[in-house]
Image (cartoon, rainbow, N blue to C red; front, side, top):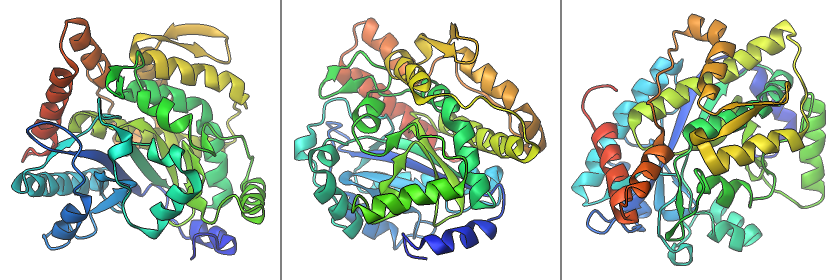
Length: 382
């Protein structure tokens, strides 16, 4: 199927098995001595293609100092995470052998976006030409999860139900307090830089089903707004090529344990939304303006702040987002064997505590890079 063969989308989703899982983790490529961004994607990509277990396991993401490790399609969450762990270990070993470090924060603390070359692929040449400054400015790193959802109409309705969940996942994942060499005062500067800048991004509208979503894509094509469906960068979207619902809201995670836990939570949320669609569970179709209030709180304060119960109009401590999502997803988590285990403080909170204690940005980032190396490259499954 071509990227805009819309007649084939329904067939792709009709054949998509439920609950397959794919994990995509973006890392910054760094000089180990200075922790500056190092534009070495092409070199690492070419080397990876010659190493057992790494051919097809990595991809590029806009700039040459960024690389993505991808699990491929796992039969279930356990399979996808096992595949991802093997690929992490193999790639971190390769990076080590090439005197390269890898970072896993949502932004690089001080890199100058004007100095980062765009990778030379047709897709990213198109992105750069279409977006210019918006593309150049996007030096960000995130965690994406795909879950197979049979039937495109059902997949669109699953995305509808996940709209108010997005800010909660963002608050839990926040891991980017720095941008452009300064403390941004935010917990997720990545979201402010990327999600609030790119077109067709962030919290999507409610579509109600495939017919309305298709009409929207056809409008974009007809008006020469897009030429491929991946130019719709919503924080949750149906992925036409894979027959999945893709959740794209989360910052990259400093530790492998946090990345695994967050991937498991996203899988549980998509699976529970699909279950609720199937069972006709009522839900509140909340307007975007209300969901955006929680998006801002997640960006600004992360897990240190307070979120809003949008149906009740009441605040609650952001840490409660884990319990709320855990309670909602309990039925499918029980069936899928998914336990939720998050540290007391997420990445942004750990960095902010160091900032408050007087640590420099270099010390804060070095501590995060150390966490990443120790956990993503370890020999035993995390």
